[in-house]
Image 1 (cartoon, one colour):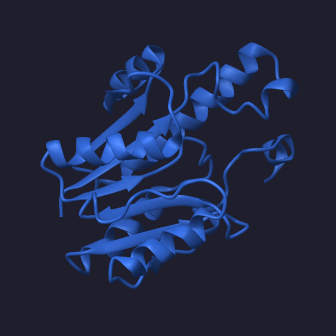
Image 2 (cartoon, one colour):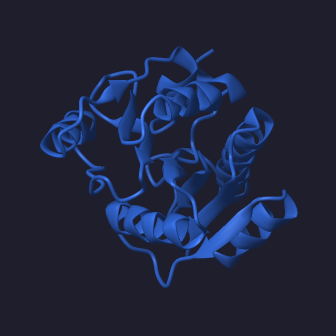
Length: 195
């Protein structure tokens, strides 16, 4: 299996808007970039990615990704997350990859074993939708599609349920991967101090 891993990112000025009122601009930028660097490092350490790229409309993030040995996918302008994922799906196919893993850039506790586990579950069959929920089991913190266009992305409210429904509509049983490190992301100020 040739796996592409794509990390869609809003421009720094738009990223993590809920946290911005609680952080000065420098601290906000440092937080967002450090989380992205952590996710890229975990992906690279996993050793399972055929291609890795950051998809963004922010040139700073393109350069940051390239400096860390990850590719970049320029987004024409900031769009919705699902539109960005659709661009990632097209990119993965153009790269010759037969599977695509979408990871948010705020998975501060992601470990390489999480990425490996997602890949292992998809390798077991030629067509697969692998979903890792967030801690509340409402959102999707990882989505692995084999092949990349097997379903349309359903990110947004209740995406965990919607991705399962989309898999079933495609004739597949969704594969659910539970992981305490993959389930935790940062959206609200209180999550900054969680251990």
